Structures are given as C-alpha cells and as structure tokens.
Image (cartoon, rainbow, N blue to C red; front, side, top):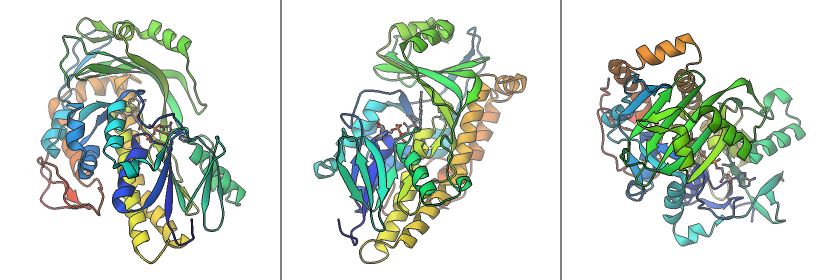
Length: 447
Ligand SMILES: Cc1cc2nc3c(=O)[nH]c(=O)nc-3n(C[C@H](O)[C@H](O)[C@H](O)COP(=O)(O)OP(=O)(O)OC[C@H]3O[C@@H](n4cnc5c(N)ncnc54)[C@H](O)[C@@H]3O)c2cc1C
C-alpha cells in the first residue's frame, strides 16, 4: 500500500456492504470487504421488502432479472385487528407501482445476498473475505488499519462501516474521535439508537391459502404483525412495544422467544392462521430488538464513514431500512469516485473530508424523515394511544388518503439518488418520472 493508492476497506458483508462491493467495483475503486461470518452468503435473517428506491439502484447494477426470479411482487395489504376483524386494506404497494412503475418485492435475505454475491465477477468476489471479525481500528497520517480477531490486519485509505446496528466501526470511530481530543458532544453517544419495540420473525412454508405476493397486517394495542408471502416460504414479523424504551443492548435466547410466542401466539395473521401456527411450522425464526435512530456523525477525520444500519436504524414497518442503506452507498460512492478522479493518486484528506460531509448532507434529512415515518407506522399499527388507533382505523384506512399520502411522497422517492457514473437506469416509469441525478425530467403528477 503506497500513499498514492486509494483503497477502501468495507467492514460488513450484509446487503448494504455487498451493494458497496458492487458500487466500488463499478466505480473502479480498489477495495477489500471483511465479513465476520464464516461465509458471505448465509441462510439467516428475515425476509426484506425491496422498495422502488432500492430496486432502481439494483437495476442500475444489472441485478433486476436475477432478483425477479427469487422475489415476489407485492400488492394490496389486507389488514385485521387482534380479533380478526377487517380494518380495511392498505394500497401503499399498489400506489408505489402506479407512481414509480415498479412494485415492491419481497425477498429472503439469503436470496438477496446470494444475488449480490454471485453477480460479482470472480476476481471481485476474491476481495470479499469471510471469517474476518474486525476488532480495532488504528490510523496513521496516510492510512487506516483494521485489526481482525484472527490476528490479520488490513490497511487502506478509508473504512466504510457497513457492520449493522451494533457497529464496531461506529464504536471505534467514537473512541478515535475522543482520543484525538474531540469534545464529547461532537461525537456519537456510545448507543445512538433507542429501542421501543422488540420483534420476532418467523419463516414458514407458504400455506395453501396464501399466494406469493400476498401481504397481511394485524394491528392492535401493543403488538402488530406483518406477513409477506413468498414462493416457497412466507415471513411474519411481530412487533411488540416494550414496557419502557431503552438504549441498552437487548439479547434474546430460546426462552425469550418461547415466552413471546406464549404471549402473542394466538394473534391471527390470516384466515385460520395464527402466529403460533406459523411458529410451529417454522423453518427459521429469530428475536431481535428494533432500535431506532439516526447517528449524528457519519464519518470521522476522512478515515472512517458509516452506511446502512451502522448509521441509521429504522423499525421494519415501512420496509425502508435496508433500501435506505443501499441508497447511502450510491451517494457515498458517487462522492468517493468524484474525489478519486479529481487528481493523480490518492485524494487529499481535505478532499475526502469534503466528500464525506457531502455524503452525509445528501442523505441525512431523507434518512431522518424515513426513520420517523417508520417509527410512526409502528406506533400506529400497535395503537400506541387512542389518537394512533383513530388514525389507523379511520384515516389511514381510507383509500383516498392512502393515494394522496403516496402521491405526496412520490416526488422525493423519484429524486432518490442513483450511481451517477452508470448510464441508463433500466426502469419502467410510472406516473412520476424518475429523476436523473436529482433532476426530474418531466412534470410530477401523482395523487
Ligand atoms: C424483522 C425485520 C424485518 C425487516 N424488513 C425490512 C424490509 O422489509 N425492508 C428493508 O429495507 N429493511 C428491512 N429491515 C431492516 C434490514 O434488515 C436492515 O436495514 C439491513 O439488514 C441493514 O443492512 P446492513 O448491511 O447495513 O447491516 P446488517 O444486515 O446488520 O449486516 C451487517 C453485517 O456486518 C457483519 N459484521 C458485524 N460486525 C462485524 C465486524 N466486527 N467485523 C466484520 N463484520 C461484521 C455482520 O455479520 C453482518 O453480515 C428489517 C429488519 C428486521 C429486523
């Protein structure tokens, strides 16, 4: 490694880290990706909804065809309350398709990471190293080094922390900032996210009375369920409000999972199917805490930068956390590419600092809005109080309100950034034209 060479170290090979691998490769930026798990593609985790904002970027990377074969388009959401009474359908996914020309799709984390990994050429795949748990980060004037628990070290110009909500990179960034004399109020707190809900997700064989692409929600006091049916398996997420919010890291084992099912197992999901039934037929399940928040500081000293859940954590209700993480990657890599192209050799620290500041500025407001929207959706579905219950039953259930709401959101969605150095985004348009690099090419008409 010489001081004229610019190299990125990506920590974390989840969906956002793997998107970064694609984007960096396509930008011609040298990188290595370090993932703590024993293989890059693993069969673990809940299913995800890919929204038009994420699908457009994935389409730009040439992945839509492969993704379409392993995902199902989503349409109308049928909603009931805790005793199975109809509380009105939600057409948010239908309006996504009308407005943006592409329906949200549900995909398993396995299939998503598999597509992201297998579509990289083998010489790029060899830059993705499993079984590398990063433990510490050290910096010198020109380089940044990560030290892994297996004793290996990797040196580069900058680290991208794509290592999830409990990010080691974010914690190391905080320690480095404090050591270098940054005042405590100018660094992220040890725990920047607040947990108000816990969740259990269950994957189970798609029952005969559900069709791939079916979506269901069950709403009521203290808990809500979302179901997305896939070709072979369906997934439910059950979100339950905690007695009081906490910044402490919650850990769950089999006992907590079983107690959750004992408490909530009788909640209906669709006709003749309860959470308990889905759990009994489970292929996989897991219990997680649903942290929420946006870290105030996304980078430090031109050496470390955060993307995805490491920077911001949404509740899953709007299916937007991962999608936003992928968009982070597009904005960050656009900036890194611009500054690596600006001169010969590695860009100066000042230039990288500008790029990282522009990255956060380009994303922060949208991410804060998205995080708040997700939190409100979870609070509404779990009937946080009488007002949220009223909104859920009498306002959000109204199809005209749903259409207006999605129409109002559409221009910002259409301006979602993509990679500026890849020509032609292969996306059918809807009522609202997609913007090219933030510029709308024809009038916006939605709602
Ligand atoms: C029940 C549920 C449903 C969800 N549904 C949706 C949805 O529908 N749509 C959506 O957009 N989002 C959804 N999300 C959110 C989504 O899962 C996350 O936003 C997404 O996984 C974030 O991706 P990431 O790559 O940033 O982080 P992660 O997925 O957390 O990946 C981080 C990676 O870093 C690795 N890692 C961690 N520490 C280290 C280390 N020290 N060294 C090396 N590697 C390390 C981990 O092993 C992991 O592979 C959902 C979340 C939950 C819990």
